[in-house]
Length: 495
Ligand code: NAP
Image (cartoon, rainbow, N blue to C red; front, side, top):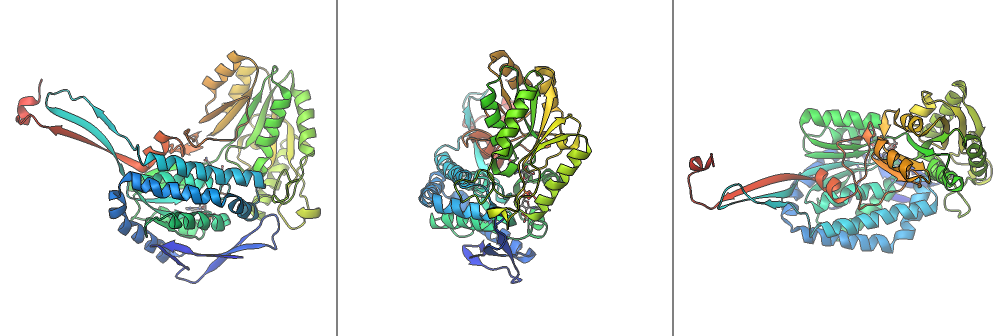
């Protein structure tokens, strides 16, 4: 069992109240992964103060030097990849191959942002006047609060921490309570890589108490949040009222379209992986599949056969396909949606029950569930369930399918399986989501590309990855005009 403290001003320290909470393995609730400091307001105040104090020197540290620290962190992450992935699987349940991918994203982001230390470019443009030049430079915002969810315990914090740091900001990081041990490992690696005291501060604690207080703190200059839509929008509102820069990446109700000309084996594999990977607990999970009427019955049969073959269990066992849900509350929420679906008249084709057999006995396991006969307006087709539940909806044609996909409050990710280049081009243009996949499932992102959603999936569009998105969130522009003509300004007003 690990002891996870806060990291404030370069020191690992317990909560000033002495209070703690436990981080539990969702695949085996008798396994306490870590005992974690439960921060109170005073701890958040101290972390913000430390970040403020460190800002002056860090912003003046040459960006390439800042990048070198991130490069060293990437090397350390890579060295410890397997051990970190195993901890992740134990702490939040995703199967080991997915956890390895999560750590790999953190490694990739660290290398990528290390390189940005040598770019961080603005623009130099011609002036309309002789003997004058114009340029724009990127500057750090100041103290950035970063609040992250549990489903990507290293990738998402890295998406935020690395661009924030390379841009010259200092950070107060509040990770999810469910993945505090993973977060502490990431912070420790950055410390070992040579980050000066106070540049990155970690406060653990409950979302409402520590997270809410941090989000509303007058000492922060910007905030980047990833998590549920309701909390994200409340945070965005609070920041807007105070004039703080904010970006929120939030929930999704992602969909795959399967056309009549699709390679059905590929489409089924995409629907299984997109719907049930990470037990359906990805922001990009494909919780809807919209199928052309001509292949609807065939697809349903293939999809439900494949889903019923999935093996549930502890993610550290390499035979496991699907791990547990994160906690009891989430399990109850998913079971409630299964009842809602049945009540709405959808047909539960497979799964949907709690699994308590064998290695599932002490965890939060639900059998992968597929609903057929779902209509676009049903709650199970509209609301984010965040569990292994997929709704299959019949479509008349491509236009009908695209309309159905766009007919939700969310807009994170979508996919189409088709062999027809014209259909894929139409879908690419018309699907109102931040990410569109052609002949691939709704999940998977590369850190050199922007990432983010439309509508209630994204506010402020941080687009965590990519150059523009991440750096735009964590920098502000300053434009500089230099006149070396020696002429009075008044004389130059009208050319
Ligand atoms: P969540 O409950 O919204 O929590 C996210 C983070 O916010 C956690 O650190 C949480 O702390 C904290 N928090 C909770 N209440 C807060 C409050 N009142 N003020 C400030 N912070 C607060 O979300 P989650 O269950 O961790 O993650 C699942 C959600 O995240 C899903 O909706 C999913 O779609 C979304 N997500 C979106 C993306 C994306 O890129 N669009 C990526 C991943 C996940 P505690 O853990 O301590 O409660």
